Image (cartoon, rainbow, N blue to C red; front, side, top):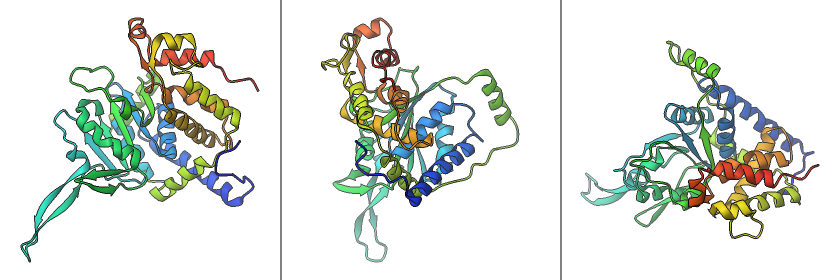
Length: 341
């Protein structure tokens, strides 16, 4: 079985599109590395999310360059970048925009005029998204799924492509509001930023403590990115690999007959069907980034943890034994290794 869109790899036009995809990806990384040091795995996951058309939740400690990374990538992509600092007093209208009454000086008539909020951009940085109440967090639900927003009964389409790159701090829990499961499920990845190595930190010091400032150039545009998203969906995947991805996701559900005993012991709720869709799409983008024209088992296993870590809900017993989602997923991948070639 291949993907729905059949691929003719002998096509000169298709080969040219694939070469341009790989060239653009290399150029994006080249520009981003002028500002961002290390974090290769994180950059790869963010780019995969962009090429798939998904959203990314970035979890990292303070000072790990989360905001700088998102802003730099947006500049490199040549897209409109908007930033929202989420705070406890932020209102939904501060995100979506609102209608105001304006008076025509000539006629004296008053009319409703819609003033767009910061959501009307290509790349939306939702900074510290867990610092605002659920009422305001939910303002992003429609935008992330339908690429539109509704204000006073009027539906407004958002510009394409549209990406939400949200950040959250994992250590400061006081005064925060955990994201609801429905919103977490709309994120393709939960990417974790860790501290840099000693050598990389020295490079950061060299880049940021002098008078020289790196300049980033745009290497692509919105129209080309939409083309890349269509190209990724054309990558074929064999039926055994698609079935393996589905079995991996189904095994995270404690009420499933396919779930191993440790899943039934530690997991309350597992991943949804959307996780299977995202896992296959992300694997296609990773394969194309690796200059392969088909998905491999390695693509699926490499991306299973960032796709699933925010989609499984652990029970009290797992918390009492200090087990994290990553620990459970590591055991699951060991329990369900890919079949040997």
